[in-house]
Each structure stands twice: as C-alpha cells, then as structure tokens.
Image (cartoon, rainbow, N blue to C red):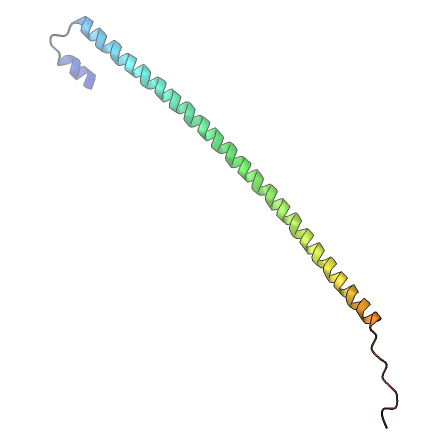
Length: 108
C-alpha cells in the first residue's frame, strides 16, 4: 500500500522512472531475502550444534554415572576386605598374645 501511495503521489513520474523504482525495490527485496536465507542457515547450524552438544553431554553424564556406580561398588568391596583383614588381625593378635592362665587355688 505504501508503495502504491508513493507511486500515485508522483504525478510527473514517467514509466522509466517507475520501472527504475520497481527494479530497485526488487533488488532490495532479493538482498533482504538472501540475507534472511543466510541467517536461517546460521540458525539451523547453531541448532544442529546445540543438539549435538546436548546429546554428547547426556551421553557423558550417563557414562559418568555408570563409572560412579562401578566405583561405589569397588569401595564397598574394599571396605568388606578391610573389615575381613581387621578381623583376621584381631584373631591373629589374640593367638599370639594369649591370656595368662589363672592360677588355681588363689593366694595364701
């Protein structure tokens, strides 16, 4: 509508001037469309990269959780081994340091 009003408001315009104006507008529209296309390409690439990063982050998180679970299992197993060794050391200490036998009959 604005273009039509501009053209109608130019009483001394010739067909050549109008043609030049229209060609200029068409050229500007094509430039804007090309710029928009480039922006859309950049946006698509950014979205693709963000999706890939998100997927990699999720996979890394899952892998780390698996490793953490495995390490927790190893800690529990080591704690059990420590308890077993401590129990064995306690038994060994008891057998190397026996209680002195109590004397029968008491003191006189």
